[in-house]
Length: 91
Image (cartoon, rainbow, N blue to C red; front, top):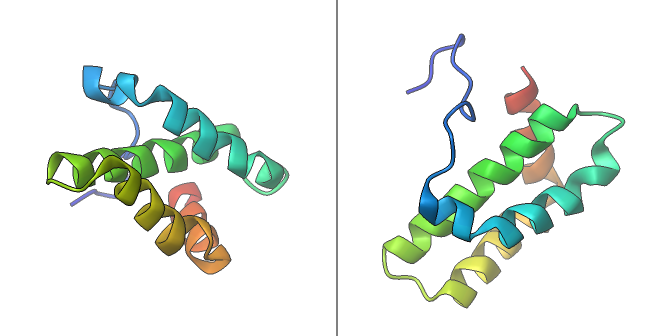
């Protein structure tokens, strides 16, 4: 569990995470419209955590396309989820 003083996105990306750079780039790009409300560090952290979730789903046996679709359906297309996560990351 993270403590208030810890930032969830301070670690350097693993080789697996770097291979998913296009997904990270897409997720970050989709949030750029929110840059008036959130700083780039928060938006980047959101994209990093989202990419890590997709990677973990694939590592646990999910089909890569299905993992992306699941993330998109459950997170990306729910404005409340995105705002909630960004608010928590910017605290």
